[in-house]
Length: 219
Image (cartoon, rainbow, N blue to C red):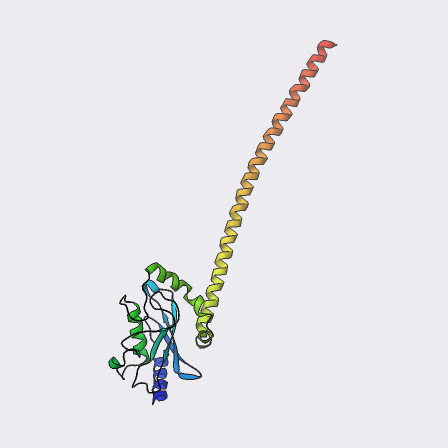
């Protein structure tokens, strides 16, 4: 029953993906009871990609799964089972009609709140934004993440290339500015040297005229 149910839910997600926010969920190829998900953050989590797992019991949907978020978010402790109304912490409140979509939508809603629970932490909005920027770099170190979500691996490569180009452009601009500044200093030095040369030539002419004038009286 569990395998059939999860297979149907996978087909349903493929037909109607979760959007606003975008949430992607896929089972481990070697174990359909282990699902991996990615929540694309909004608000203070904007730009973040949050990777986690759902661990289903063999008697699902009669019992709820464990819910874990592995990416540091500033909202939940990484790699900890979360105490949610639709997780295995509260089997008494579990509804067998709930699904992977229901669980992940509920997780996202709770993530956007500030209510404490087992597995949650309290951080500032600036810390959450910082972790959001670092989230994809963190996820890419996870082999399962890379195998299950290759589209995010490609996104990471694209973002890295954009960073390199931006850094190259900034370095080029800095070098250009340095060359321009150096050139201006050189022009200033050339002008000073030219003026000094003119004064020296004028002084030489004066000395020569003085000598000629003196020789005229001697002869």
